[in-house]
Image 1 (tube, rainbow, N blue to C red):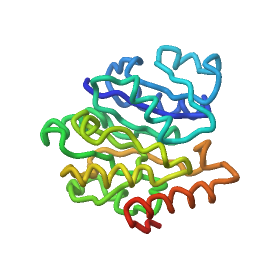
Image 2: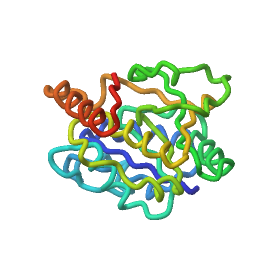
Image 3: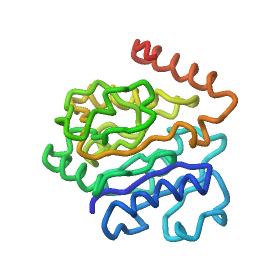
Image 4: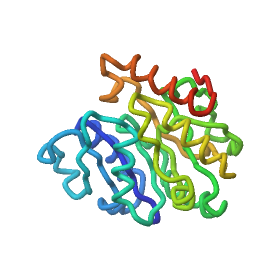
Length: 225
């Protein structure tokens, strides 16, 4: 296994549900491959997660910062950036994506197909029998697999995105500008639940979305919905 999972979470039960779905669909996963970036006291970790590595979130929560703090704990592996409101539903999802990464020399960011909430990216919910879509312009980081080669070349997420969203779009643009590609792999799937995420329940979510939208437009001239 050459991948690790980074999962930021402010809710112990959400975190347990997400990571347990990985263990249930993959053979003999080493809990040290899980890096939980937590916004709660470590004592609140459920017993089933006591073997995982954890990093304390900086306050206030900023997604890019949380992911970067997790990346600092993963030195060699490719990474899966997993939201805590995601459930892995297909067998060996990340092993399959790891194989695709090997076959493409680590030159493409990969994403499983998404059932449930696709954040207005309906192309991500294609049927499981569909062919891989290898020419994606961008996709939301619901559960992307980023090969180590791309991490080394593109670097970490831009922490100037202190609101909510679009830091993933920014990363996709940066990767494509260096000649990398983005691929959706319908053979493997995750379920994304809009109701569960701690951070999308925030009362200031619209202003946070607006801030990052404006920053993306300023940086790249992209007026993303």
